[in-house]
Amino acid sequence: MNYDGSQILTTTDTTRTSGYIGLTSREKPNAVNSYYDNIMVRKYASSEPSIISGTEEANIIQSVAITFSVTGEGVLVGTTCKNALQGGMATVALRSTTKSGAPKVFAQAEDLQPGEITVNTVADVPAKLLCTADKLTIAADGSSYAVLTANIADSNDNFILSATNTISFEVSDENVLKEPLPAAASGGMATARIISTLTPGTATVTAASAGLNQGTIVLTAGRAAAPGRRVLQKKLSG
Image (cartoon, rainbow, N blue to C red; front, side, top):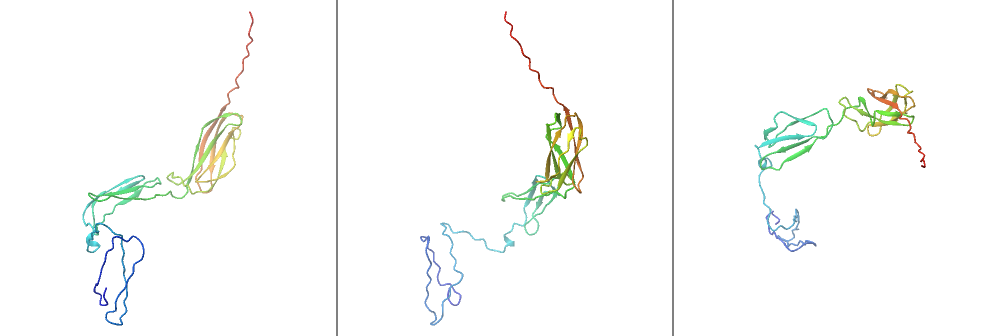
């Protein structure tokens, strides 16, 4: 560029792949310094890139039919097919369900690349304990056991994996089942081994934690099978 802002020279080099750029100038008029600013270098392209001029708003498609859809634990509210509003955009509301998850919303329009976004829906505050066991009947032999799992959940039964509450376990009849020790939740749950006694029967196991609704499960200790008898046969010689 000249001192008055006019362009003097532009050049293209299609062979250089590395090295340095050297800039020189002659004084015009005499005793006037030369300055270089806004020097731009871009990667060579065999076909020159096209340029669309105009304001940002002018290049936005103002009216096009956009269709929204969703997968996962979420529901779209209202009309899912809309024309682009002012500014070249359309909106849709996503309503969560009672289950936590990661619903994904898709936007599609003819001749346009589709768009998508994932929205995380998280569990509410801890409200209750939900109990399960790997088996509901065990042998009353003093050693058989069932593994009980107490999950910390919100009011909609969503497990809260970050909860670390201490959970205690109480057996309604210790003549049938042995009461386990309390356990701290890890990953939102605590487990306990419920061991039988030698007395057959049914007992309820209750899981409890401060501020949460209790969880219960019923386990049965059945009569242990009698040990098999070995029969010895004597071979008779004729």
